Image (tube, rainbow, N blue to C red; front, side, top):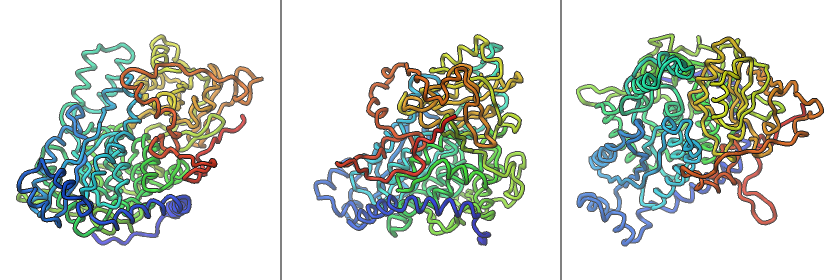
Length: 634
């Protein structure tokens, strides 16, 4: 389809220009390093004969002969396969499909390495959740280890879920002089309706149904290979990889173990070889300030995961691009909400795909002036290819234009008539710090809460207070010491059913935490990722039970409006609470160093880009203008 978009939205243009200026030094440094790596020549040409022999010692005779030619591309595959993640179980078959596809076009492919891939669905509410966010940086490092053999002309990344794709993305950008294609596995078929699942969870939280009933419901939801079908972090990843130009078009939500999925995987492998031969669309050029903005807009337009308020900052930093929550908030103000997918609606990603899917969203956003269309993708110049959908015709993969009109207005709408005029992700700030809140699933009447605080240091204590009936009142539940320094910043989704029950009883309720709520944060207002975190001197450490807190998502306010001890204002006059809890067991003791050097949530909560200090106190990177303590006196 020919593209003739209107002028770029002025706010999108303004935010992009600000990001470009802010990132001028770091982006220039990154591109210089990638240019130097590219100009040093193909990795295989630099390896000695002994190096090259080691690299292919375990390969087939045919692949050895191809490799000995010296001019044939070799594709490195980094896989996050394990068969405990339903979304990653299909990757067991992918390496063989990729090898076969590239052999057909005169190239070779090798699994360069694997990365860990933990499942947040298994570790929710468990000690292992405290390793979840840190696993992203471990995955980035593992990707670097895999590709550092320097024997590859291009690479493919196999990953889907929450921390895995951001980690692969960050690690791959360290080798951005290469073309790199991401190949997903797709969602599982739909299970029981999401509304039914939510109902049973709420009833279990109130003791109205037993554990076998809950387990039967959960098994009915998560029942086969493929991504979980709600629109959480994993599926948000896939939307962003497409609008960021790293997927083949419309491949995110095709089911695994189907002929179409296999054909798309093979096509991705052949496209990777083609890019290796031409040298086009290296990852350093695909991921730019403009493509990062496109990824943010895609996330906002579809009501995606709040986790990406953290991940995207770290992901962009890997390409030398500096973004912050103010950028996201301003982009959200002009991004129309086009999709209602659970937990922001009742439909799942399969229904979203059937209604028009990514191709519809991409075209609508581009034609509304919300996307940069002059970007580089793995398909070449421009974004038009992402308006297309794949299909199999007589066994052959063909591409066609996506639907021009939504097939279900309850799930997907055009930019001219969106569900709401903004993207629903907002910045809130005040004397408690800076935080983000997703309001796309929160009814307008629930977006402003002013109530006494109930303060907890562990989610177990908060849940026990709920079970004891102590929270059935207007309340702001404050859960602190959950930030990256304190305990790795776990998701706190186990509290969602309890918070929903309180709200459904007619009480005003809000959640405030320096932890994460996950991609499944839903109908209860939640100010999350509060920065600076309590353990790093953040104001949450000074809040006490009974202090009156106001969370106003409409005005962007998170503040105290009254404290019990009137002599203790501002909050910092008070002595801070002490953090407590284990930092050992379940692997947590292995990550002590991470907790000491991790950056703030608004800096991406990463150890990969913790700013090193040179002799004399100078840092390698100038401080980001928004990465400061913005607390103010009450």
